[in-house]
Amino acid sequence: MTLFQLLIVAIVQGVTEFLPVSSSGHLILLPSLTGSPDQGLAIDVAVHVGTLVAVVLYFWRDVAIAAKGTTRLAAGKVDTQGAFLALCLIIATIPALIVGLAIKVTGLDEAMRSVAVIGWTMLIFGLVLYWADRTGGTKKDAAQWSLKDALVMGLAQCLALIPGTSRSGITITAARKLGYGREGGAKLAMLMSIPVILASGAILSIDVVGRADWSMMRDAGIAAIFAFIAALGALVLMMRLLRSVSFTPYVIYRVILGVILLVWAYT
Image (cartoon, rainbow, N blue to C red):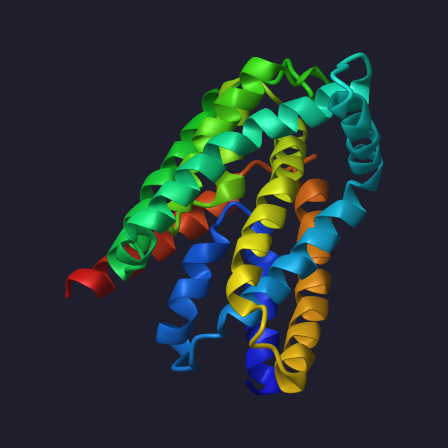
């Protein structure tokens, strides 16, 4: 791939991974819109690594607490804040892993990679996000995350396996309806992304191992760096804007893009 193509793929992945607009949907659409070839699994892994590093760096205090708590959890003890956070993250991740594996084994993942599917999910789940943001409560913050809420958000996260839904979007939607404020809901959604990105990157890596060469490794490294910068910038911007701005701008973008894609798909 050319440097320009790597830059475009990395920026699209980095920016859309954490904004509630669907990174998978944009990456599927990218070759069709630009006429460029599919980026391949190696680049997919690289941009996942880049976004993973970005979210870990941004929420490093919470990540450190959860990582430390994991050792307590492994010993069968849930007696610290970190151990409870780690347990909540595990519970929130398991549903998506089970459903994702089932979709991959049955081949449904390829069947859902269509412009029509992305158009409908962009539109529908954008409107659902708007409804949840307008009607959801604000009494809870991220520190009040419970096992029940983690499970509900984890089940909602399964819907993100449909391209165009948006993992961050659907988990934020669930958080808002559960009564979490915008910043708190977004923070939980971002923390939930860490084990999911780690798992998906590991699965993708299985198909890449053994085929890597110097050229591929160079391109992957460049893509990872660009994705990291784009993802970190998007995270910083979104979390700051949520202090004064609702999710409506993202909803408007989703609705407009969804309508355009549906017109394109059916005409």
